[in-house]
Length: 147
Image (cartoon, rainbow, N blue to C red; front, top):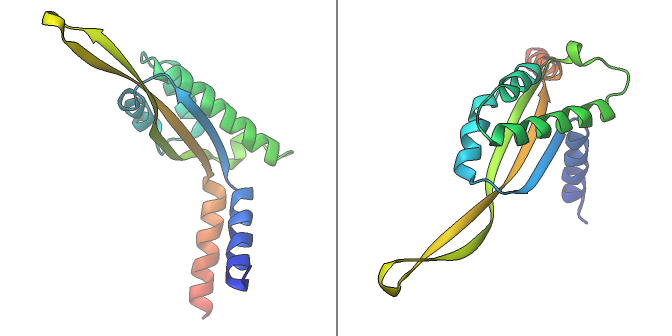
């Protein structure tokens, strides 16, 4: 491996240590319905997002609620000893991609057949830390001032 690739791989590895991700694959809900709920919580604080998902009437909200709890548990695993309230976690990124599609046939009038596509999706949720982001921006600003 060349030195540039090696340096980039090391940088990506370091970034992953501060990234708190949870994934949910093959959810039997259409991506369109899941995106409606995902748009509700994108950019929200984690505790507020939990509250919104818990009391939402939409069916995909239950699955996203569990996914957000899983991402918070991943954060706790990487940051033992630090408190959740002090770190200001928020939903940094949430992606809903289409998953596999089950194709079915439904009988239609006059001997025809209509195709039914039962859609599924994949959800990726990334938590961010507002405290770390503020520290990083201050460091970048100080670097610009000093140079």
